[in-house]
Image (cartoon, rainbow, N blue to C red; front, side):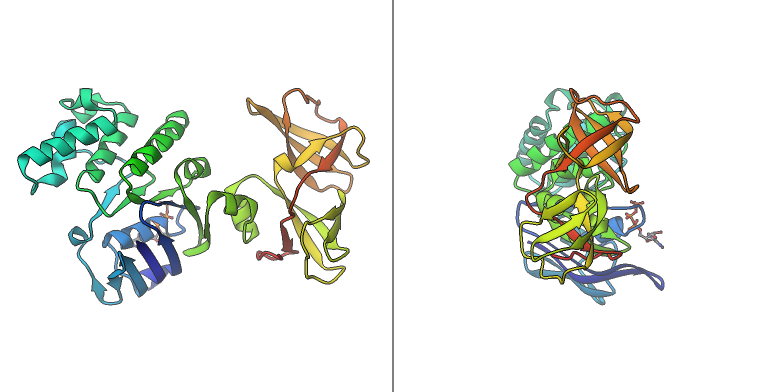
Length: 351
Ligand SMILES: Nc1ncnc2c1ncn2[C@@H]1O[C@H](COP(=O)(O)OP(=O)(O)OP(=O)(O)O)[C@@H](O)[C@H]1O
C-alpha cells in the first residue's frame, strides 16, 4: 500500500535520510521512533509530497508518487496529515474545521461525514464550539477528525500527542488506534515515546541518523532486536559480557546459560547478552549474588538497579512484596527461553 524503497532526502548538500525502506499494508499503523534530528519528519514530509527524494522511490497503491526529478503534487496524493500543534483554524467551529477538506463534496454528504466523524471522536456535543474552548485532547481529536474526513489513503501523524500530558497521551493513543482501525486507515506516526508507539503501532521502525535500523512488530523489536541501539531504544535493558562455551551455551557472571538455539560461533567468542529487567528474579537459593544499588517504585513493581560482584550492573523488575533495602546483597537468577546475543563491542546481532 505504502512503500518506500531506498529513499534519500537531503537539504542542500546535507543528506538527512539515507537508503531508507519501509512498507505498510492497507489498514496497518506504522510508527517511526528515533532521537531528535534523525530524519523522522523528513520522511513524513517526503511521503506527503512536501520534500523531493534525491534517490529511491515512494509508492502508494503500487503507483510511484516520488522519484528523482518526479513528484506528484501533495494535493493529488490523498495523504492526510495531523501535526504536533493540532493547527486548528481558530475562527472556525469544530464542525467547520472537520468539514474544511470536504469543500467539493455535495452538502448532504458533507454533513453526514462530519456528523459521522464527530461521533467517532466523541465530540458530537461540541460541534459548535471554537478550538479555544476545547481541552488539548479534544483539540487533537478534532485535528484527527479533520484529517480523516476526506478519507485519505494514508494518514501521517507527526508527534500528535507531544503537547499533551503523559496520562492523556496514553489513553488518547489507544483511542486513536481504535478510530483508525474502525476506519481501516493506513497510518504512519512519528514519536519519541516508545509507550505511545506500543499503544498505537502494528509495525515500529527505529531510526538513527537517517537510517532505518529495524522495521518489525513491537514484539519482534522488543524480543529480537537486530542490534544494541534498537534493543536500548525499545525498552530498558543491560548487556552483560559473556563467552561462548559450547554449541548452545554461553558463560557470564550469572553462570552458564543454555541459549535455546545453536549459536554457530566458535568457543571463546566474546559476546554480549541482552537482559531485560523482567528476565531476572530474586531467589535466596542462588549462588549468584548482587547488591541493591538503587530502586524505583513504579506502582505495580519496583525497578532495581543491581551490581554484581565483578562490578557489572543490571536492572531487575520485581513485585512490590520483594522489598529490599539499598546496600543488601540478594541471590538472583536469570529466566529466559531464548538468549539475545550481540558480538562484543559491535552493534550487529550474533544470532
Ligand atoms: N528545511 C530544512 N533545511 C535544512 N535542514 C533541515 C530542514 N529540515 C530539517 N533539517 C535537518 O534535517 C535533519 C532531520 O530533521 P527532521 O526534522 O527530519 O528530524 P526529526 O527526527 O523529525 O527530529 P525531531 O524529532 O526533533 O522533530 C536535522 O538535522 C534537521 O536539522
